[in-house]
Amino acid sequence: MSNREQWSSKTGFILAAAGSAVGLGNIWKFPYIAGENGGAAFLFIYLICILMIGLPILNVEILLGRTTQKNPVGAFKALHGDSHWKYVGGLGVLASFTILSFYSIVGGWSVAYTFEALRGTFHSFETPQVAAEFFNLKNSNPAWVVGYHTIFFAMIVVIILSGIKAGIEKASKFLMPVLFIILMVLVFQGLMLPDSDKGMSFLFNPDWSKINAKTFLLALGHAFFTLSLGMGAMMTYGSYLSDKDDVVNASYLVAFLDTLIAILAGVAIFTVVFSSGYDPTAGPGLVFHVLPPLLAQLPGGYIFALLFFLLLTIAAVTSAISILEVSVAYLVDEMRYSRKKATLTMGVLVYFAAIPCALSFNVLQDVTILVQGKAFTFFDTADYLASNILLPLGGFFIAIFAGYVWGVDEVVKNLLKGNSESVYFGNTILESSSSKKVFGLLIRYLSPILIFLVFLYQFGWI
Ligand code: TRP
Image (cartoon, rainbow, N blue to C red; front, side, top):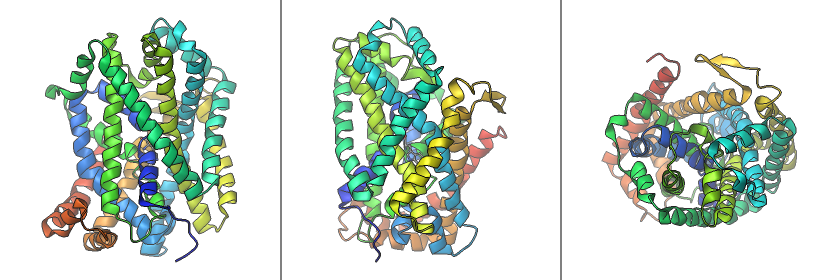
């Protein structure tokens, strides 16, 4: 069709898409959100959200990319002309700036902590309080935060510069298996600990009394974030697929891998936290404050701490590339930039856009705006704006577009196009008319209504 680069294989695409999905959301966010919201009860609701809302939208996003062979702005233009729908794609490009500007800071912390683990720093931490002081002290130095943001960001730019096959696909094919092996090592060591059953039961024995409206809304928001939905990242990755590739089957696999890895990360983390008698409700600091001293104190702790932060870094890198790729693909398709020029342009812009987030822990820590009665720094604002506003808004419009503008018939027809091997159960399910009805119900009613409710909730209207 064109000289647009494509994945060299279906496995390449699945690993890249799984790499995008599996990120800080699985290893940093999921455990602490689950920890604060009743463990198993949250897990249960989260699984429902992935299945009923995440999966249909994931299918639609990948399909929009595959069908149009374009970045999010171009994809809406290709299907609906030069109409207002292109702004939904534009929202994605904006979200890519916003997400990456805080994601790269946390990515930088992960790199920094990998080095600290290597130097054996965590051995001297007696308690999580000491670890928290260390974290705050390091972050009070702007050069430290900006420096590690720079290192992390440089890795992303180098991978993107190398293109789809030689960059993103190659990196994912190497890093994702490594990530999985490291995670399995951590899971097994966690299960060997005394009292590991306490952690397991926290994660798998639901206390139903913990479920309320907030659980549902948090779970939905997180389902979007963890599957990389709502800003065209999966659309962009889908645009490097050919019509022959099976979207339905790929979506199942990506959602399955993402969920599996979140649960395994939960096992690895909660077994350690519970066997040391700590509280799982530590919040966002769980991974950077609580875990380093607990891991370091285990027999063989040096290696486990190192493996954990390596895991976090790998997860962050393969996700961050998918976020930057959205903006790069936009410049390549719409502005006819070369990949090199597009990457360098966006790289420089996003790199500098992230600086205020890096300074949120030191020189700019008092520059805040009031969000729902809380003082938010640039960092908090970027996280909030992306996860709670831009992604759900993008997801809402994508569902509306698929359900009412493009139309369920057309979506299903296109979904079925790619399955030369109709043995995959996803397609068999879609081929029956009742499942098409279910798909229609989910994408036309359930998704938009639930996302709308999340909005009302965010703004305190319900
Ligand atoms: N899914 C990733 C995570 O869990 C984050 C991510 C990558 C993302 N690309 C995205 C989130 C696009 C939203 C949109 O960490």
